[in-house]
Image (cartoon, rainbow over the protein chains, first blue to last red):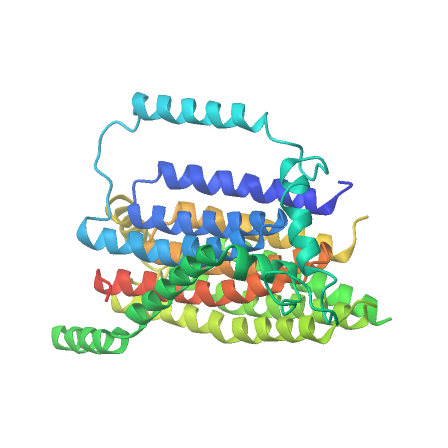
Length: 202
Length: 119
Length: 87
């Protein structure tokens, strides 16, 4: 109760777990796709709460937008009902449990969140910060990768140090735009055909 | 004074958002569930985001860009929420979903069950 | 401690929970689409509220993105339900 953001975080994570379990249990695949969309929405808020804004953008655009469309495209090739049968696969459960245990074991070696002595803070970050912050409008010519033109440390890292990463992220966003065009383009025509067909039926 | 107005707007908006969802959960039929979705949700987001804009304006740290974004979000939702509700109801009607009238409740219950099993 | 933003955020989360229940229960596909749409609206509002509570303006950009993606996702779902194909 002391920290409102923490309280909201816990509530949202409980909702996300509920949505994921419901998506697992339902036999209606279309419903499962929609529940996965809800799950992505909740996770994007969580990423934003953890200060991971770029991950949150990607989760919002890809998780809730593009992957819903991909799964729907897959559903057009199959049916929307799950095959009846046993819902319990011991091998899959074992794999997931082992992977989860290994990941949790791995987190014990990570430095604490915000630790000033962590390798990430000690090695790379000071170099980035000294090269960008404080060099805005510098009069003397200095040797850095940006020629004193990038005022924002985050922009400097994204556009220069992680240029390829950003380039392919842009490709992802382009793909999302193409998806939007694919969805919206033939909508009017097919709806008209549908209306005409139903009128003929009546 | 305006702080309290903003608080009241936000809590009223939260009430509308909650009661709209309650209606979506409790109402008996798809077409009746359209009402809370289209109306309460639009009004709720308008009140909450309006209250937030007031708060940001009267905060010492208030900046115009945030207010502009809040107004943009509010306008966007104000247009898209009724539009999507309309689109959902239109597709439901085109695909032959019958409204529940209450007169033939046994038949309606039966069709509802059938929908449940082989949707 | 319990200020207006927090009360509103808790109310919106409660509403999101109810919408999630409707999305799980169905019974028809249209109920689910409606619930997902409502859930998206709640998420956008919640993002704006959280941005104010945590004093982070970056949340608003994500909220704008969500308001757009949510509408497009609803239209895509409806298109699939109506014609059983995309594109």
